Length: 354
Image 1: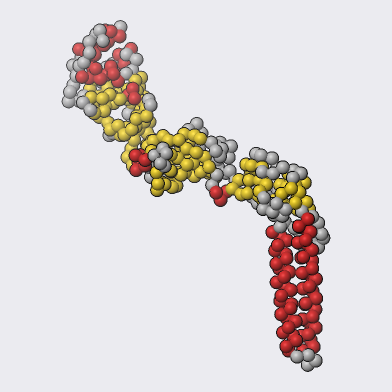
Image 2: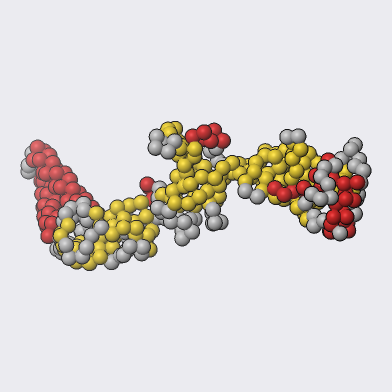
């Protein structure tokens, strides 16, 4: 039956002016021609490229010991989610006692200097002492105030309390809400001042560092859409590098991914597609819907008599699909599969044995 239909097609006159391939609905069905609508798209794929997932530098914090001592307890493990202010570690630090003692001494010295200053001001008003004496006690009071502020600041940045009670118990807290991405200490060991304990990061925002072949970098623009393969995540190009990697001859492009928690992970290598917003109306079709002739591309659009041949511009091609543009309303029905048979009939090529 198909052999007969093919002979019928080849022997059917073609109306060159209309570029029409006449077919009945029965013939279309028997030939296995699959029909469907054009799929309109708003982004045109530019290229596919590998990417690395990184943590933005301002989203990552190293939590260090503010004083030397012995680690009594570590409360967070690798991968734990922590809130800002959560206790990460407990340290027994003799140095903390010294700082607290200095603070208490400075506080007592200030109270004495304040009393002396008030007393001398009263005596000066009564004419009992000279103004020079008041100036001296005022200077001592100011110096005592500075000493207390310094002692208080040193105590606070060391994690100590200004409650007035001496304690060697030092509490290390998380500076942000995030995830523990590294633990760098062991309970029961001695650590030095500023020695790192943890790395904590906010993973809601991540960076994609994309390797663009240097010959394609002019095709990529700031603001281009980045789609991460096998995820629902999208991003935008925010930076294009100004130098070429000498090892692989690629240029760095960076995209920012927001709300990325648990969908992609820092350190991951993945593939992305970079697309650009189309400035013209474009459509996605399977490659089986397009025919080539004399260096030009065509699709077959359904009409009352069969199909008429419509020239199109092929914008890009990837795997089994192509992006095209042309004079369409978007409601046309085209031959998605079977264009080879329609092309042969249109051009009067082939034979019943082919």
